[in-house]
Amino acid sequence: MADNIRNNLQNVTIGGNYVDGNQTVHHHQRGPAATAVEANAAATPKEATVFLSYRRANSDEADSIDRRLSDAGLIVKRDIRDISPWQSIRAFMQSIRDQDVAVLLVSDAYLKSHACMYEIMEIMKEKNYQARILPVVIEHDVYNKAKQIEYIAHWQHKAEQYKTDMLAIEPENQVGMPEELRQMKHIAANIGEFLQTVADMNNPDISDAGDAIIATLKQRNLLPQ
Image 1: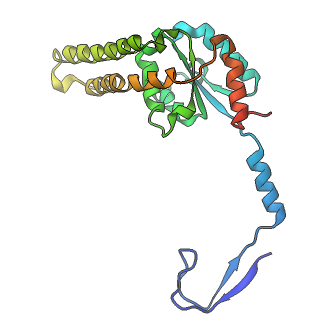
Image 2: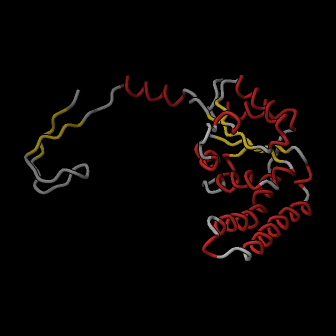
């Protein structure tokens, strides 16, 4: 029950929005029952959502992980079922930032895909994004420093070639092209950091990835024990 406290102070601000005196202020005290409810709510795992980012060339691996996570009660966001007809593909890719975690099936084809790298650049906008990604490395060449340099060079070359191709188009006709070029340059500038982040993680083998993801989400209280 609320306690009624008479305030006789003049021109005093209370709670940031009350000024002047001779008003009755109600202060509500939270009892043990309310505290217990809040504690139980904090201890109850939320329904976690997982964004599955992959290249179509790795659909078999994606299908396997998708089934394992879905069977465990996780909500898996995936392009083949979560992009409705005529829905924006870019809006779906940007939604990677809205999910609890992003499972990334990292392969050579993945790292050379503009769409996949767009999703990576989106999640990297998040503070401490490293805690939000769970890479599943399909091809271990990505751990090789020389190979990492090749991927940076690949995106630099794509950006340079695109810029050259744009010269054949009149500026007034370059609708969307400058933004596309900016994205390629952004990928070239940041893919090195992403690869270093992935290489620094103790990534499970692809055959154990589903179980490892579930175990990690249990530890984070995102899945029932």
